[in-house]
Length: 135
Image 1 (tube, rainbow, N blue to C red):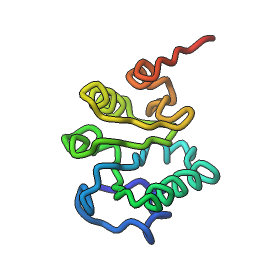
Image 2: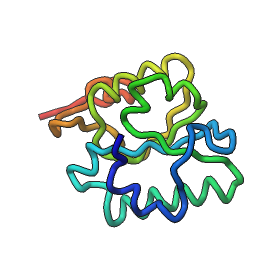
Image 3: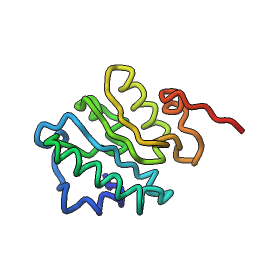
């Protein structure tokens, strides 16, 4: 499975490994869909890297999950996820919303994961966040 291109900027911090590295119960969400739209570069990418460093500074073991991990059982290994990406596949968003309803804690920055792979509203997460569109 190919990792999203923005993970290349984390190569010096995160190496290939197993889920829940160092017993991590916390993970950052990386989205290949968001990378396609080039929305997580510059300030947003710097913010994501800073969030990772802030969590590590608090001595919280942090893992990385991608959209495929949200759609399979890997997401169930974590207690908390941090989402900063603007776009997330609709199927991954639906899985993430179900995970939250089962008790997972999702921390999302403004606008995080509200768009899907077609640049439309990610319905499951918009509903989860209580966000409605107005023309």
